[in-house]
Image (cartoon, rainbow, N blue to C red; front, top):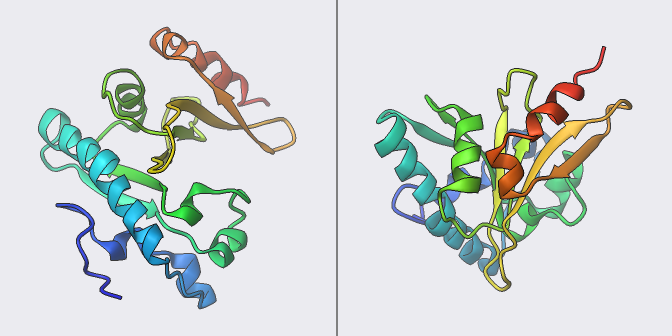
Length: 184
């Protein structure tokens, strides 16, 4: 397998497979060919347009860092990933972008980008709307659902996902939920 294979103009296979957990636990995080094809579509249809927007509209020095791309089932289980995670299919990526406000980027993707994504998740924003990472997915074989989610912790420290319509995002109705999730 050629880890330097270009999946798109700016993304290589190795960055979509990189995992510190896999390295630490000696897990071989190797996808099947069909999953590589899905990673390629994710990069071309979702990650490249996001990168272009950030580099040309916000910050020329913006760097997209994939924090989690493909996960083999063993890796997904070892990090506590969802049993039906789209990461295991090559359909999802978690990312951060240096020099970019991820909250504003999440709003741009959900409201103005026109991207045909399946799900986007603002992951665990703090009370100031700082986001540790964004999750986004793209399905090749099915209709993408354009689901807009925010992952929060409940009072028992369990992850909950709240769904928001475009109208609720425009009105920033989700901010109240985020602030309420930071209980004393």
